[in-house]
Amino acid sequence: MGLFGFGLANAGVLFAGINSVTWMILAALLVGKTVGITFFGMLGNVLGSKLPDGMNVKTLALAGLIAGLGLTVALFVSGEAYTDPGLQGAAKMGALLSAIAAPLAIILGIVLKVQKKN
Figure 1 (cartoon, helix red, strand yellow):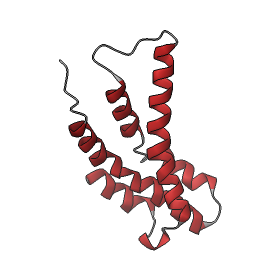
Figure 2 (cartoon, one colour):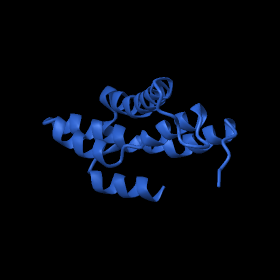
Figure 3 (cartoon, one colour):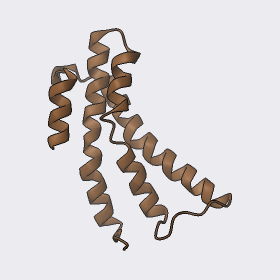
């Protein structure tokens, strides 16, 4: 929550700026990163690159979801990609809302029964 609050305070966006761009950025970060990292990790495994010891498809998907947390590059790109302040704010809000990846990852880890390996 602290990182989310810091990002929200310093990104200069308003909750009123939520629109379809917000939801597209959020979906791209959460779904796109999760699916992309999982798919290409599995593809690499099929092509001969082995996953690290103790890692399987479940943990790969979980890592993909965690990667969807877009509080750095996504915030920067949102500010640079759009010239319209309204679109900038909506895109930044989508990046900030990607902080939901953290609790989702915890819940997914519990549901998938991912165990910490020593």
